[in-house]
Image (cartoon, rainbow, N blue to C red):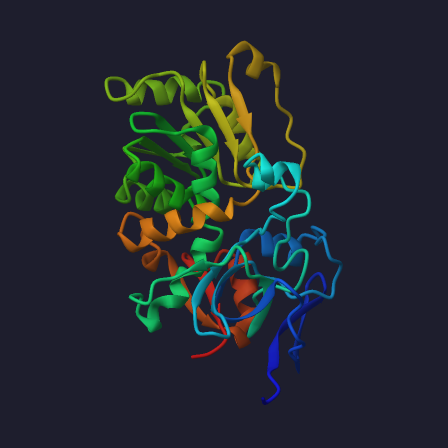
Length: 344
C-alpha cells in the first residue's frame, strides 16, 4: 500500500500558520483517519489564532473542528466537534457535554485545516449517499454551527409556543433562529447588524430588532410590548450567541420571570452581572459546551429536509488560502461561513 501524505496548515504560535506535508501514521486503536472534504472556520478558531486563547494541546497544532469527510472504507461522515469518552459518570448520566475527558479537533489534537484528521470512530455521524458529492462540503457547518444551537435548544427545553430570544444572529445564532422556527417556537432575532436581523426574519424570526434600538434597562419591556398579543411576556428562553460582552449583558437583562438563559457564545472578557436577578426572577442559566454527538443525526436530518438552510450560509475556499481566509473572517469581510476544502 502506498504511503499517504497528509498536508495542511499548522499553527506554530498564535498568529502564524505554516504549511506542512508529512506521512500519515497508523491510526491508534479506536480511531480512524478521515479524509477532510470540508472544514468550517469558526469564531473559536479565531480566538485561538488571533486572541491568544490557549488550546488544550499547546501549539504547534492544526486548527479546525467543523469537519465533514470520508473514511478509508468510503463512508461520508460528520466529525463531532467534541467527542466524549462514553464511559465516565457524566457520559453514563447522559450529560456527555460535561465529559472531562472529551476531545475536540483543533484543540486537544490536530484538527481539520488539513487533508486528513484522526478522530474517534465511535461517534462519527454517517451522511446519506443521496447527498450530491459536490455539495458535501456544505455540511461541514453542521458539525458545530448547527449542532451547538440544537444542543442549547434541547438543554433549555424549548418547545412549540415558547419564545426564543436570540441575541447575536450571525452563524450560530442564525441557525438557532431556524431551529426554533422548525420546532414551532416564536423566535426573536437581535443583532447590531441590520442585515443579519433581516436574514433572521427571512428564516422564521417573528420579530427582528437592531440591538442599538434597545435600551438595556428597558429592553425586556420593549420586547414584551412588541410581542403583545402574539406571545407571553414571561418564561422566555434567551440564547446569547454573540460571544460579546455587550451581547451577554443585554441577554441577561432580557430574562423575564421564569426565564431561561443559555450562554452559547464565548468571550474571554469578564462581564459584570447582577446574578441576584436569577433568584428574584426564579430564572435558570445554562452553559453550552458543544453538542452531544447523539444530536448529530437529528441536525443532519433537519438540514436535509430543508428546515435549516446551510447551503445559503456557507462559501467554499481552497485550503491553500487558509491564512488569507482567516484574515478576512477576522476582519468581518465575509458575510457567509467560510469552509476550507482541501481538494477541488
